Length: 298
Image (tube, rainbow, N blue to C red; front, side):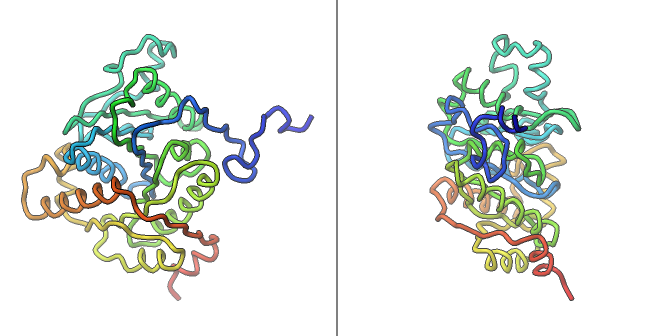
């Protein structure tokens, strides 16, 4: 028997050579529009996700945000505190999920946004895909997705292994947060490749990228032109965003000075654009050596 003989019908389902288990149809999220937010570690995915959630809520949408990071800090600006993770709570009941109630792992944040921190396995052990799967299973068991219009997965760093690519199995659109620098664009190129691989077997498509904490967007735009991608937003590096994180609030709760209002308008514009549906794009990522030469300076 070859090493793969006991793994049923997996090859090609999630990219050539993948050994990731195909999504169980019973775990599909139906009825809601689902977004997965990716980008280099520290680029501002949680800030972007939380403010987008607040913007969707301000549009009157019923929103659920799922943080997929062991740090479990995705939703703290919506709730004002760190929440325990789904995995931590499951451990407390010896993984008897039937003992849990929705209020054990869901917190209502600003604007009525339902906030969940999936968490992640301990460092060096387990798989993030299992964590995402258990979280979605719980949400479905408690019918928490039945009355939801928008789901946002805020995903750990620029990790694109099978586990942390798992939210792409649920998503309609993937959004990449980047900056106008080498490392962020390099990570974006790899994420594009991961999403495109998933799109061969799942409904997920790329919505575009958001330039974050960037005065200019020339390098982001040059990359997008090269690979056939699209920038859908730009959030400059302004102090109001830093202050909102320190105050544990979204920009929609902050005192409305000029910078705060400008940021709110941009997040509202983005939320309206994403909910209406972006035009399809089909970028072709660059090989590592090619992007290194494309972005580098002589």
